[in-house]
Each structure stands twice: as structure tokens, then as C-alpha cells.
Image (cartoon, rainbow, N blue to C red; front, side):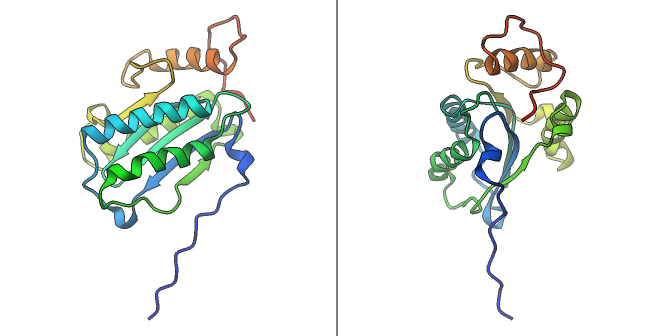
Length: 193
């Protein structure tokens, strides 16, 4: 029986990934390849994620590296933010470190809808991503997984395991996405597209 060729994952028009978009990205490996995940890769991943975030004006309140895929949520901080181009940059600079493991042709993405962008729903989506290692029985609690974090340009010690993470995140997010704001508090929900 002939094998049907793989189809490409559908993509929304490019403008859905620009500006103040909020997108959950999942990058999966062909044949669910493993063996690439280690601390040196994690360090380089953080470095490239930081550069992509700074260059394309993005914040990443959650990323999670699993043995055969990774997740990240990016939030556009400005009208000229570009997650599509940042994703290409991330994959280009990480592929040489993966050895024989090869990323699937396209990442899966989920652009958060209005109801998913509200503070409580957004935080629940982040928690769901963080819980992956515990659901996979790799660790008893997600906080024990070494390959999890947050990358927000200008905040090198930002850690989602910290008790004050969400309070700090919303203050930082507001300051970065609205530099003219005099109030350092956090909004009831992130800005809607």
C-alpha cells in the first residue's frame, strides 16, 4: 500500500502572528526523536529565545523542553512584533545542535482567542504546559523538571517556580507592552487584538 505524503500544517494569515498576538507554539521532532535534550542545549535554547524575543519584541512567560518536543508561549509586546519570523530564527539557530534529530517541517501553533487571553484562562494555559513532565511521569511535580522557564528580555532571573511569578510577570508585561504607562500594576487581562 502506498504511503500518502504528509501535508503541511495549516497556517493562519501572517498578521495573526504579528503585533500583540499571543500564541502557543509546539515544536515536534520527526519520528519523535530523542537524545538531544541536555543542559548545554537548554542553555543555548534560552540564549536564542532571548535574542528572538529582543529582536522581534516578544515575551515568553513559559517554555518547556520535553524529550521529543518543546512548547512555548509568546506574547507580542508591540505593534511590530513578529512571531512568525522569530520562530524561523529560533529553529534555524537550534537545528545544528540537534544532531540527527530533525524538527518537523512546521511547528503547530494555537493563536489564543479573546476568552483565552483573559488573565485566569491565560495562566491556566501556562500551567497546562508546565504540567507536561508530571503528566508524562518524568517527575513527580513540574517544578522538579530542569528544562522549564520564562524568557523576558531584561529579566535574566525570571523563574515561573517563584511564588511571586505571576504578580511580577503582569507588572513587567504591562511596562514592556506599554512603556508610557505610569502605573506599574497589571491589567485585568492582557490587551486583546
